[in-house]
Length: 313
Ligand code: TXA
Ligand code: MG
Image (cartoon, rainbow, N blue to C red; front, side):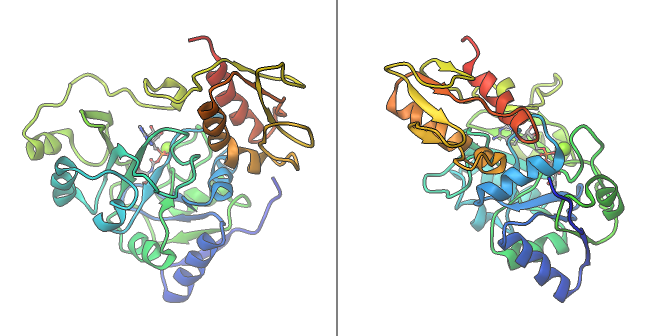
């Protein structure tokens, strides 16, 4: 990926407007939340979301948390229920992420959820994050703003240390007060603790009047490790140069095929299209053959996901 000058922005009106404009333009902006700094991208823009994985150097497509300014905005993207409302009343804005079923017509890039039919969503409790979300007027997908495998950033300097030259801007508003990622709770519909974090489990148990399993939560590091992970129904063959009869062919680069991940052999575009195209071909209900994807840059994450989709089951 080409390097760029990463802007150092601050929490004033002019800089906030600039940060919002960058997000609307599909660029990446790191911004403060009360938990950790997030690496933000417009969650509806597949290329912007693909750039997040590229900037972080993630070797696989973990689903991302989407950030919204309030409950009403959350309801545009997920199927709301009473438990969610109870938790939102108590913990939003704040360090609780809820995983809920995606709502029809949500308009989000399928890369945000890594092809799942659930969405992790959160209303952050940080005035600068709140203002940015309102100005950008967009759902913002944001993992922690660190290179893959490194520690989550709690100051703007941490973000510069890890991602300088790889993202458009860092919006600096000092140190994060919680300093620990959000607690992730699955509500699909059984209540399940998916990650410990800024909101104590005991507080959630009190609010819901239920006990949560005491064992270590199953941290989901990639969709392939999730029970509900997405894989096509029919067989998948990888690294093939042409399809056999009866197969659908998913191409990459200039070639004859049923659907093409990127005619220009652009890995960012291919990542943005990956889950959509797999879903489209899966719906047709035939075995799927897939062209070779170069094992460089985002190609590593694409190939990781494709290997999982093709694994014997
Ligand atoms: O505090 C935080 O949560 C920070 C700030 C920026 O909001 N964000 C954060 O994101 O920690 P990230 O990408 O580092 O962790 C998100 C995790 C994923 O690794 C995955 O485990 C879980 O959220 N996740 C996301 N979508 C999910 C889904 N649909 N089902 C289950 N788990 C999901
Ligand atoms: Mg992280």
